[in-house]
Image 1 (cartoon, rainbow, N blue to C red):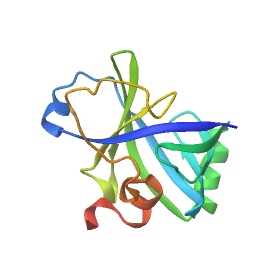
Image 2: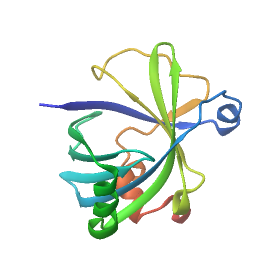
Image 3: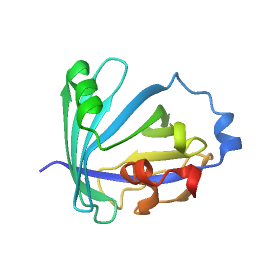
Length: 155
């Protein structure tokens, strides 16, 4: 079984703007299924596509299966089968030997930034960067699938 253990946080934008960061990667992300029990997502980067199946979260843990697919097939799935979609730029930052993924949302979710860290266990210790603030793990309004139907601009 593939498990994802992920915690999500909001950012102090003033602090985040001062961070030296690599170029971000643009994601086009759409959902084939958005159900409380599961999501099936297609993600397209500049070079690669991914098909991801996620189960319901219990705490910070959920089942996750992700498969690389050709970019052209990802584009076709998004164009013809996605029922909801969003775009974002992802930055990967290393802090204290941990990878933080920071998503800058675009379009109807512009202005929202969320940092994620994947862990080996729910109680794994880690140090937050100074630009990481409030934890929002488990808050449904921050789920990417929910942002497609209830965008940040409408909060």
